[in-house]
Length: 497
Image 1 (spheres, rainbow, N blue to C red):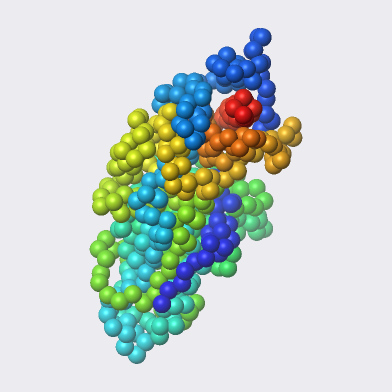
Image 2 (cartoon, rainbow, N blue to C red):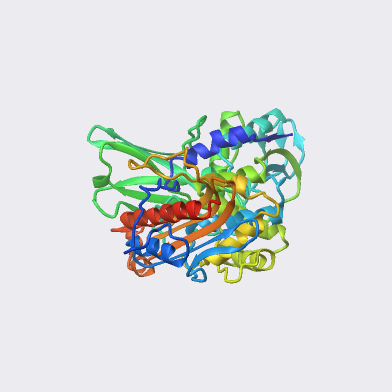
């Protein structure tokens, strides 16, 4: 007996968590039309292209390539062989890798396994919550598993509650250089709940604050005991973190709380977190379970309940739209496992993806260290990104997964009636901005493009504590996005016929 999560449910529940997080890309700014002396940005050839690049006022290095998507002919290129950080544009590569390795029909499964028979409502043995690498597992889905278990006649167990998370290797943080409290760099393992994030909320209560830590979704708000928060009388640092026997212990500076608020914090012990919430939801169904324990080996037994994810293309569309790092890492590593390899880390899995990209997409200098683009050392060239986009047209599976990218008017509002249509993936890190995808010109011509910009000197000066909001980072990224719009505007007009 199992439940299949529909696409509508997936978008309305699991992605509701995503929409509140910091992974959403900012809207592009006003499209500028800089002019060099005597040269228009719409002049065909290298002069017009350089007019835009020089007029952008962007520190660091920028590279771009545009090609005819049908023939592969390069139409314009500036430093296309420069290896730069791709940021989340790298998720395009992960999507192609996953589709080739797993297939469009692939679904992730999370199972409940009883290691012994059911006798008078009691499982004579252990109960195993077995993670299947599903990056969209949420509290609602665990509630469904608990309800299925009740419907199967289970009232308790004689053994242990085990959580198996070893389908994928444990990674403490996607990017260890990020501050501990950054929600877009959680831990990774074979089981993830609510994108491995816990909801922290605080409200004024007299002269202090009432604090909650829960695994909320639209339906449920179970408190958790595997993540704890304590007030500290200080102004900075805002957060501190310690792992104590598998429990995430946080402190928060009282001077930073104001009158109230909320944010999602990363989970560093995902297996115990999932077991914690499942234990609570089982209790709500009248089933008393012991505290969970993690197991590295999957015991044999009978599957008494299971949940399946939405199909892989739905997950990839959400991953690209919301730029969710955990989804990229779990899907990418699952693709590697399905190819017959057991990765020991994100980097080892990414290396197998790099080799695949060279063999299947013609990418010559692909050096990813993860599947999300968050890692500091990942590098792609605009040349290689365009090669991948052109190669993707063989199946036509990628373009429908990319979200529309709109030009902006003077007030920053999207121009949805613009004659140049764009389907693309954005990428943003501190002093790094990327964009890659397809342009459909007014006459129906299709172009493939990639734009990468990075000021690596400015990025190297940022301390770990400053990475959430570094000085000058927002204004730099705004200029980078203006450069991108200028290039897209040029290509749409110059190569529109």
